Image (cartoon, rainbow, N blue to C red; front, side):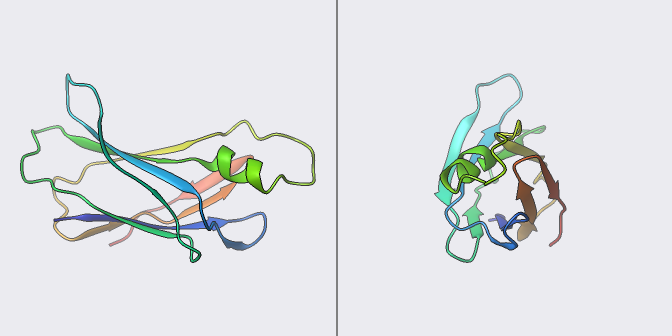
Length: 118
């Protein structure tokens, strides 16, 4: 079964985004999203979600939501400006992934950066 993993980094403080909440949903064409998992990153800012894709219909995607606004609200930044970005959403096609899809993420109250690797 494929694993969606991520290392989430706080680019404001220059550290791991420990404790950030991350949700994964299965998106099936023509159906309501299905919850797969909701996790919090460990102290190392990492998450791993095992996904059972064996019965996926063609066109199924996975949505990973990083709750960055919630994360930064807890450690309130000293600039006094609230970020407009409350959630970072990444949609993935796992149809050709057999082992791991690693999606590192850098977050800040006003921006984010994401990339993909195996």
